[in-house]
Length: 114
Image (cartoon, one colour):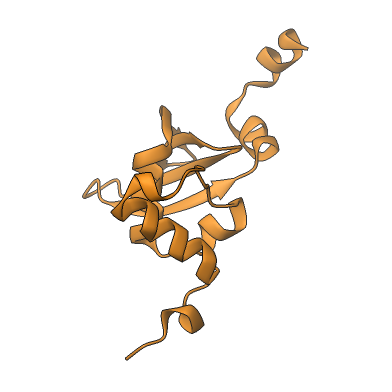
């Protein structure tokens, strides 16, 4: 038997709350979100479920030849990278607001907004 608390990079309390909330949402009064670090360290299945339950789709982009969908989640953003050949998900990466603005907002639009 594998002790997931020793193997998983997500803290045991976060795992427990996550699974408890998924099993019976009424048992956990407060909504808990993964931190940016813990989202990136979580298993891909947990990342996928958390993103699709609580993330907000923004847009799909072509970034340097990569097919990337951008989602907002809690107080940061998540990039979902897709294979160009199979359209399968290749990975999830949580990024800070600063990184997202730098990467996805045109400089001229940013200057106009300021």
